[in-house]
Image (spheres, rainbow, N blue to C red):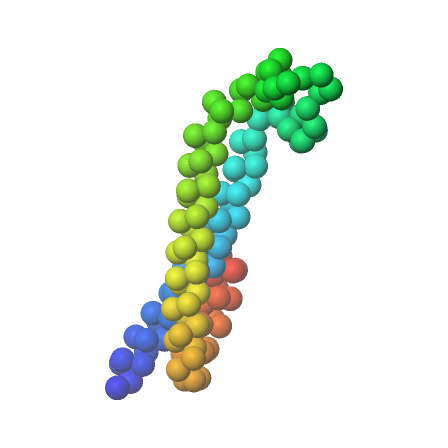
Length: 119
């Protein structure tokens, strides 16, 4: 029926907009996670211990402080993982709808992606 087709196209359009919103949310979350990195932690201190040190964390305040900020990183990583799962599920749902080879559904997905990216 025509009403069912219009509803299907609108649902696919909204799923495509939501896909783009989740993709943007992931990027914002990654930016916040990178800004939350402790500034005193350097890659050199992690990669190469000082000569004569038996324990790399001994005497290095930046390495000893890292476990304190670990829970914050853990929650950022959990949130990024959940965003990724939602993005993959939405992407597969839109892909399956497009694979119905219906031109109106295809146009709904394209317009939804365009609108979602624009917003």
